[in-house]
Length: 400
Image (cartoon, rainbow, N blue to C red; front, side):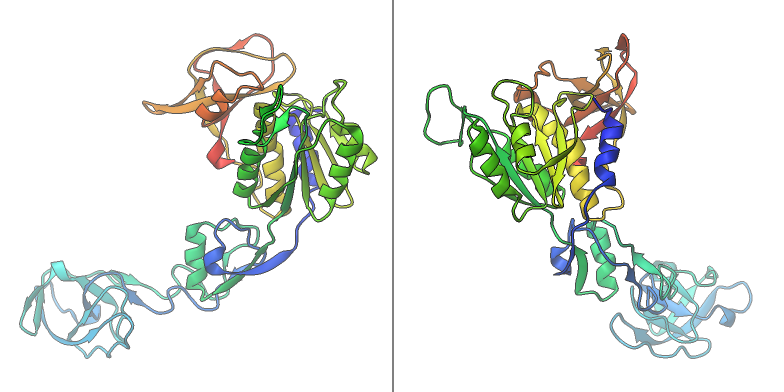
């Protein structure tokens, strides 16, 4: 068995990058940028007022005040600013260009208007309430770097660079093949000893969360020939193949040998994690292959910690591994002597601390703890137990 960190490092080191495509800015949320967005002009492009008020030249203010200046002209956003005449003030609004000759803005609340005259008592500081040209971004600076997964804030900055379209990573294509004689489609015709197939929908949801497009193949029986044919078909036109079930060593676990007969070279099999030990990882002609265990908790947890970082790395995401939180244990936790436990839990804010509450049923087939949890606590292997209050890493589903 490979350790968790070693196994994931091997997987990500061999991640095959997908190609790029150009998309409209409004369709780019969550996509990974594949070009540096370089500022074609300063941001702001000119000196702007940060307040509604009056633009003045500080050099015009003699003595200690108060001062009274005639108000001449108006500068509004979207319009050219009139020049500032000596010893006058110009009415100005937020976002408007600062008139030539002005170097400060007095907030309208800090002055008194009497007809066309402005009276104020506090001397404005130089460049007070002025957004200087280029103070946010210089011309030629990188506004958003290649490899950034685009957030709404990054889209706003891209729009400020006058970009209607940007180059992003193509969505990796994921194909999911679920295997097992007992499986039927949810809502489908029942047969003896059958159960609804419950892995493809959540796996597809997590894959899409990581930026992929998803194809779900028809269910496959535990037959070596049928499984091999299904794998060969699924490998065509995909970037990542997920098989679900049949990768352990039981008499009816036919997926791993079928993968090998279909030409998949396995890089490793079995990882020291709980649940999810019988994870198979390989490749075939540039297609990444993950053979996931069939039990729901095992399948989903292993995909979250292996498959989702792989998909992000394939898109060139500079941060493919999800951020983990650090939280305290609400109760003691017995440790596995040799495997990292990925335990389903709920995170709660208690006082000034984040506290992990484990779900009672950690069986790999238990769906209730999957539904009730908001993430997984990473309990390191070792002797004995971790005491209540000990710190562990925590990965929320929404952050994966």
